[in-house]
Length: 110
Image 1: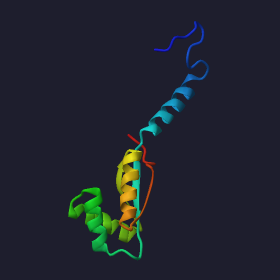
Image 2 (image 1 turned 90 degrees about the vertical axis):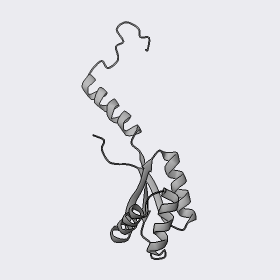
Image 3 (image 1 turned 180 degrees about the vertical axis):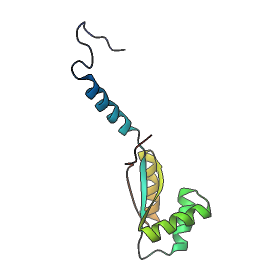
Image 4 (image 1 turned 60 degrees about the horizontal axis):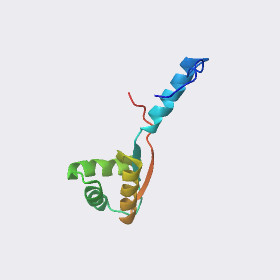
């Protein structure tokens, strides 16, 4: 608890705006990071599936699904989590020759 001087209440003035603003900022801090794999003309689809299984530790069926998303849509979100976890995944995907990026997830939490 914060010690305050009498008469210096937090949120004086338009408290609704300041509380909503603070809440939105706090909510944005715990949004996870995502890894996006981008389509490329070099890697075989079977190779991408093997890399996904190895790096992402997912089933063959899930890896095939994600690979088809990359192939058909040009990209796919393949993982989400903390920034540090996603940095490790992106680095591993790069080491296997895949084009991958990471960004903060834009999806709204409900």
